[in-house]
Image (cartoon, each protein chain N blue to C red):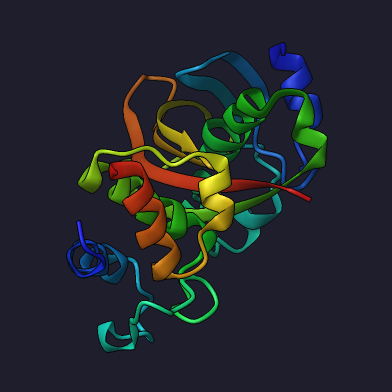
Length: 82
Length: 143
């Protein structure tokens, strides 16, 4: 899958967990999920669980520690579905 | 880890401890009970001259038994090095709880991943009527 294809599936998942004061248009591939998009650590877990379901993959603790931006998520997903 | 060991590890004390006994706990959930003391401080103001247990206290009791006791069991010996935070709460209330009533709380694991524990939690009274049903989650992180 290309980065664009993954991003197209990833973005709506992230959007679900955005706090009210952050809008969908703020999301870019470089957005830091917690620091910029203000997703809390509990919802970050929800994002990962939804990503796991959507791509039929499993994140481990190391993936979780690496995950900061949407780009990181795309890279982790790409590696796992390869 | 035994039920008594779990209670000893709870990070609460009077007047904010809402667990008397933990009857059972396993990989799938926890069950415990608490009696709301008639002289609890919040009855003086909730409500004026008409004491009823506040919903936030029922929620706290559900969380302490259903989420925190269960989370301590799942985390085991590293609990003392952990920091806890309540992250989500959704509860529907069905019946009031009056001073002196004993309630039982049962939680059922939805998932426990990356330090986040999410459970379905139910509270019943001594007549085994449903007092409250909800979903709640918390995070446990290394300090």
